[in-house]
Image (cartoon, rainbow, N blue to C red; front, side):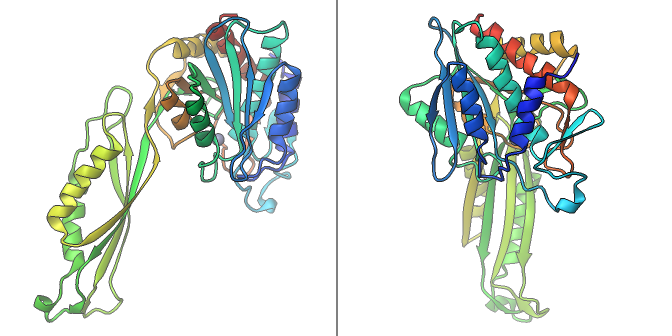
Amino acid sequence: MTADPDTLLLAEALIARRSLTPDDGGCSRLIAERLARTGFAIEWLDCEGVTNLWATRAGAAPGPLLIFAGHTDVVPPGPREHWASDPFAPSRRDGLLYGRGAADMKSGLAAMVCAAERLLAAGPLPGMLAFLVTSDEEGMARHGTRHVAEVLRHRGVRPDYAVVGEASSNARLGDRIVVGRRGSLGCNLRVFGRQGHVAYPQRADNPIHRLLPALAELAATQWDAGNASFPPTSFQVSNFHSGTGANNVIPGEADAVFNFRYCTESTAAGLKARVHAVLDRHLPRYQADWWHTGEPFLTRAGRLIEAARAAIGEIAAVQPELFTGGGTSDARFLAPLGAEVVEIGPINGSIHKIDEHVRIADLEPLSRIYERIARSLLGA
Ligand SMILES: [Zn+2]
């Protein structure tokens, strides 16, 4: 199969637009121009300096709503001299396209735009196709997809399906699709004791002695047993600090930071309650500051996974593994709208690295996969 000049050229044009998170660098405007020419209604849902594009192509008849979703922002390239070529000047070498964002995820966006152009060339589909493109995924991810999802919720928009063009593939295009992600819940814990001389422990209250058994109990707890799609919820202590530096002083405070990566068998509220039950038993005085950066989601077997499997089998000739590992992505904000969500994109081996790249020969098939999925879901 030959490289699709459209997808390749658009990917290069996007890479050439320097879009360090949360800066969009003009990428969304370029995408919007292309979509407007294809008949999409363009709406800007910018928020706090973040560029958010919501583009919709109404259906020829009532039908499902499919969202193609992605982000234009990229992570910093790191030292320029470590790159073989300028990270913001796309470079083709030995069948690979190099540049920051090549895999994460400007090629995915370019492939989606070109898929929509081919799909809609002959007029609208029965269902509705939409694009949700943000510039705040790699950073705080507060004013991007999360914000647009809130707007959609208020409007009563209920997407049926969403495909996020994140780099999901492992060794070959399409060999892996992401159908779920674990949730992330963390806590900064401070335990208060009373400082004193180690020779007079009765006049002090050692917070380390109180915190250690509490952490030991938390670390030994089985939070759930996982399920067919997810490993069991994991608890890890990432930081532990205490002590004044002196060897004869009982410190007044002890700090720990811990994090849950939790599956769909647990909830953030349930985990917090169980942690507090343990802490309350061990610690007379403490302060727990929680942060919750993502709900878990899982797309179960259904029309979207079926359509994705069929498209990948036909175009890339592989059977995709359904994967739920890895970090978080914007899919976590789309799933709560009620949509079946998957992530399908190029090979992810170089994302966030020096000399990030994609295989040029994968671009056209990737675009065809998106096109085929949309065609089967929207009934064209
Ligand atoms: Zn990404």
